Length: 329
Image (cartoon, rainbow, N blue to C red; front, side):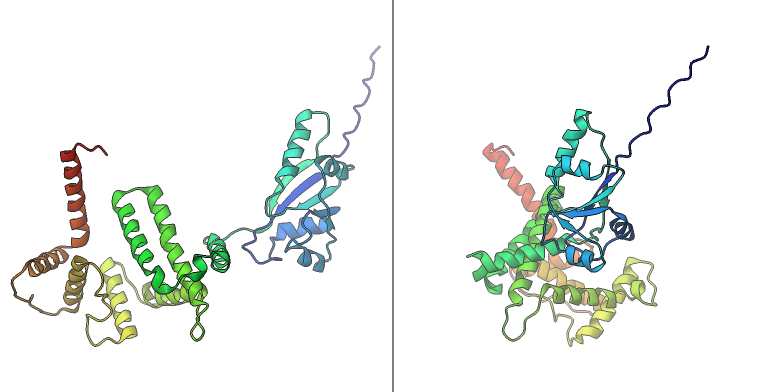
C-alpha cells in the first residue's frame, strides 16, 4: 500500500522592508521613479525624524508617513502577512535598526522579511563641494579666529598652500597631493565666503564658479563651439586668441603678477614675448640678476620650467647637506 505524503504547509509570506536613503545634497522631492513607485505601493511608510526634509514632499504627494522609531522586532511584525514597510532613513542611515535586524536574523528563530536598500537620490560628481560650502559658512559664523579673517590676512596662506601643492606634485606623493588640493580649495571657498559680506560689491562662491565656467566655455570653442583643434598647439592658439579679445591689453606684459618668484617671472615674460612673435633683446648689464634672467629665458625657450629646475637642484643640494651632516632621511 502506497501512503500519500502529507502536503507541505504553505509558506507564510514574510513581507519586505525597504530602507529608503536620500542625499541631502539633492533638493528634497527629487526622488527616482522607482522610489516614488515603492512609496506609493507601500503598506506603511515610517520615518524617525519628524523634521526630515523629504516629509513635506511625500505628504504633498499623498503618501502618509508615520513618525516612529520602530525596533527590529516591531518592523518584522509590521511586515507580517506579506506587507511592505518603507523606512525613510535619516542622515545617519539607521545603523541601530539595521544592526538589530542583522542580530534578529542571526538567531534563526524568526522568519525574516526581505530587506532592500533603495537609494532614492544620488550625489552627482562634485556634490561634496556643497558640504564644504556649508561647513565654511558655519565656521565663518561661529569660529572666533575664522570670523575675523580678511582677504589680506589670508593672502599668505594662499601662497603657502600653493607651494605645498607644487611640492606634493613634484614629490609624487598621492596622499599629500589630495590633501594639498583640499587646502588650496579651502582658500578659494574661504575667500568667497568673506566676499559675501562686502557691503557694496558682494559675491559668493557660486559667482566665482559661474565666472570660471563661463571663461572655460568661451576659451574652448573647439569643445563647446564650432571650431576645431586637434593638437595642443591649436588649443593654445584658441586660448590666447580669445583671451586677447577679452582682455584688450595694450602690452603682452599686462596681467603678469610681478610679485611671483623671479625665475618664474622671467620665464613668463619670455613666454609672452615668444608667443607674440616679438624680437626683444635681453637688457645688457652686469650682475647675477641679468645672468639669471638669461638662464631663465633660455630654459623657457627649451621648454623647461626654470623655477622647477632650480627647486629640483636645491633638493639635491639639501640631500647632499644632510649626507655631509650624517643625517638620515
